[in-house]
Picture 1 (cartoon, rainbow, N blue to C red):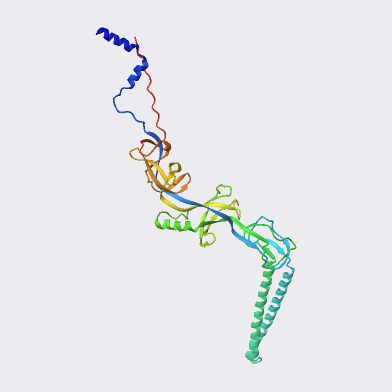
Picture 2 (picture 1 turned 90 degrees about the vertical axis):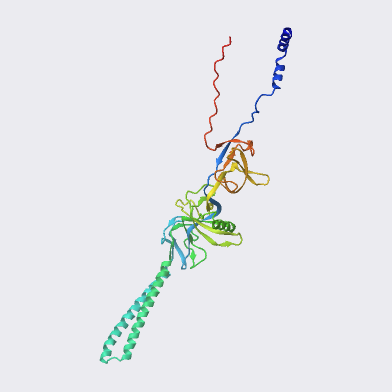
Length: 398
């Protein structure tokens, strides 16, 4: 037996090392097998907040006031009294017409008034004397009445002559054309020596007030109806009092926000849209009449809105929106959601999610519904990695 045990030990020592290793792997170790660890993901916890629903609408800038300068009397342009493109004040002379004829008419009217005044003075004296003599019987009552009537007629002639003089003065003043409003004047359509007529169709020049400015927008009537339904149902609050942002043609935001002035009550039958007018300050005269702009106007305010980052929403082949959330048990759950519009880099949620839900925004490709995950809030500092234990001194083998 001792020889057999020794022989067995020698045979085992003579076997290759790989044979021993294979034999050891075939054995079952005690305890259950260790599965993979929880997958780390980044989540965003949804919070209810007031969300302003905006709509970007195209529009055109228009002057706050526009006055087309036209002559009110006919004549030859004698002198232009302004510089094209300059700022003019209300009442500032713009054109001087040849007024020789109108001055002559004014002189005739003035002389007629003087003649009427003289006739009235003479009639007044006759009436006064007649009133004294009728008491003594030297003048009959009928003659006295005639003298009084002549006085009244003379006084009426004076008033008529005074009115004619005033009319001649108005015509003479219209020969000097002035600015009806203050603003920036454009180019002149006539030169010195040109003949202009009263109430002609073509304006001599156009004056526009550029501060503030109007921005006229067009909005589909269907959106207006939907907005009224949402406000009536309590889903939205009216946002007409909110400022309106203006975007210029190159996409930059205008320095001053505007305010909504009014909404037109007539829908254009050809386009199905109606007019919105926004008043915008324009102290630097950046906005010019006819300039194309876009306005970001608030259509309403959702008081308990939910915004979810766009990377947290996925689409299936049918276009349905879904989101992966981390449940209270730390496992992934899939939700079918409905989103209505994009606000910045987020989606506005209509249904499917609630405040407090933790939506996965990073690590979506590595997880599936039902998997346990290790959730980290977006923007939070990552947990420090575990440091390996320091190796102790090697045992002294003697």
